[in-house]
Length: 95
Image (cartoon, rainbow, N blue to C red; front, side, top):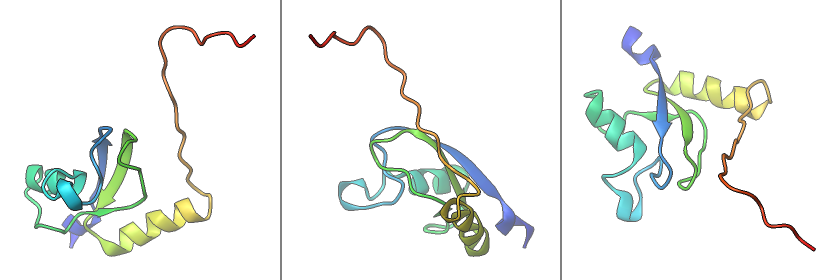
């Protein structure tokens, strides 16, 4: 089905886990996107890992085949992540 081929690019904020777990059973990225996009519960599959404390783009899909395809691209190095930190101020000098 064409709907199963959608790739969702989600802007995951820091402190929000990708999967529902523990105290985050209703406040996880997958649960919130499923509700917003009117998807079936537990149908959204993350295509790669992004830790709870990390913000950034997270790719998800409802298609297990697409999820495996994207995951394999990360695994074999065809796609990579870039972590960028923005800081304000100056680092102290170490003398």
